[in-house]
Length: 78
Image (cartoon, rainbow, N blue to C red; front, side, top):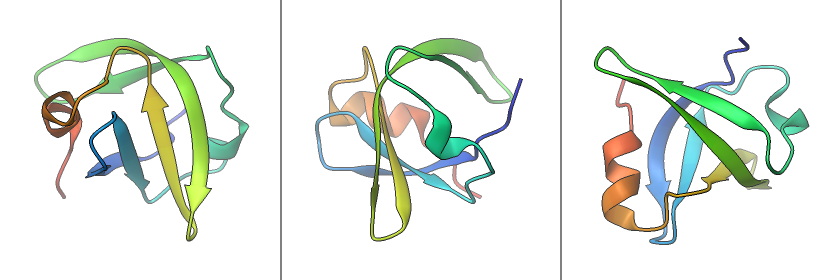
């Protein structure tokens, strides 16, 4: 397993989240690749819909996360 960073905040209301402190390899993620989200409470697999960069910040969209309410559940605040 490769740690790509923490989900830091939501971006918009269509299921995009911002990854904070990205690690090497975050930009090598590809569409349909499986990633695992981990927290103290759960571990869940998601499929990557797309990854893009805006102003140097990696933005990821995961399949099945389509609304802002779902995004907020994924955010990990440091």
